[in-house]
Image (tube, rainbow, N blue to C red; front, side, top):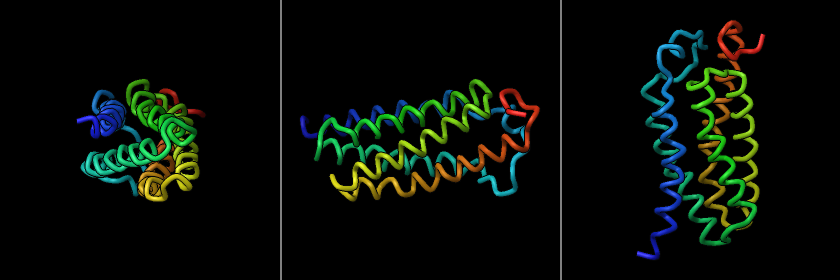
Length: 157
């Protein structure tokens, strides 16, 4: 059992971040916003995020087992905090601009993790490539929603 404690801890941490997406769901406010034509369909988000969260947790376990608590794990934790905060900012607080800033910070922390994890274990870094691609897409979607909805609560003029 002791061999699995770190897996359980990382899974619980990732689940906590993922839970914010369920607690702060898009709802009617988001559905009423103008969105670009390239917005992914609603069904895609839980499917993609489920796969990504498994990869995020596994990357954390790999680095933890290889290096313990260090800069890479700090970057891993930072991206998870920003990840969990995004749904709260966007859907809970309806702050499109703050959610965009959070997504930018998430991107920085994802890249930081990838750079810091690479010399520890390249697999952990590579597990973040799809996550990086998805968050870049989410960042651009968030930006476009901000631009298309200047009168929405929290949106910058």
